[in-house]
Amino acid sequence: MISKTKKQKTIKEAQIHAEDTGSAPVQISVLTKRIEELALHLKKHAKDNHSRRGLLAMVADRQAHMKYLEKKSPKQALALQKKLGLKK
Image (cartoon, rainbow, N blue to C red):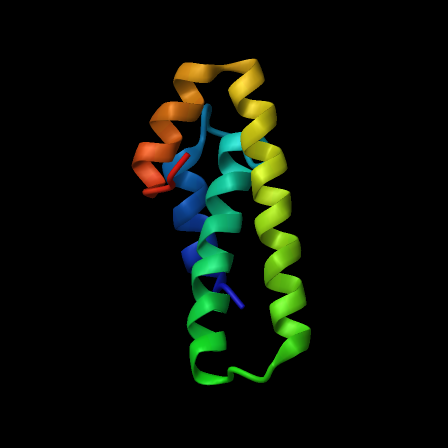
């Protein structure tokens, strides 16, 4: 679970404008943070298959958002990938 302060910080870094909380870059950034934390959890608890399923769903959701962003704004998608350290 991502803490409220970490989530707010992540949103603030990816915002397009001051009140932006739901754009594709923001959602991708928040999903990336959640994925990172859940991956750490799964390293400690390898047999937690319920969390693993949730992780796979989040990865698929992030991939769908990236695909949408690449269609809408390829430059913005590339910049976000570099910023978050995601591979194509």
